Image (cartoon, rainbow, N blue to C red):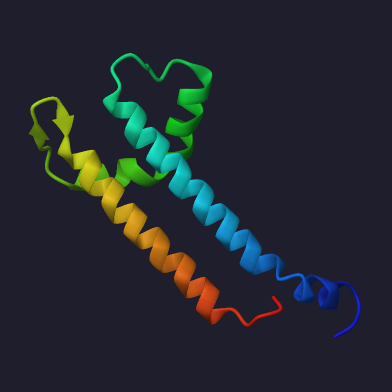
Length: 104
């Protein structure tokens, strides 16, 4: 392949993009999950609100469908949603890594 698409294919742009976005989502979810257990950190601070905003579109729809459960001060509903999303993100990243031909 020659031209612009050939150069992009040789650089594995799509594989790298899927990997970077997947790991960024996972890292943001882990930070949001850990920050939710720290009572001294509120999500009004700009950096904490950023991580909450990045992950809320993933966690909120799943957390709404799971019955509310808590263990003392810990919200188990969000923990279950967090584990499910980590699992599904790993599967999606694996799927794209295996299905996309190398050089894309």
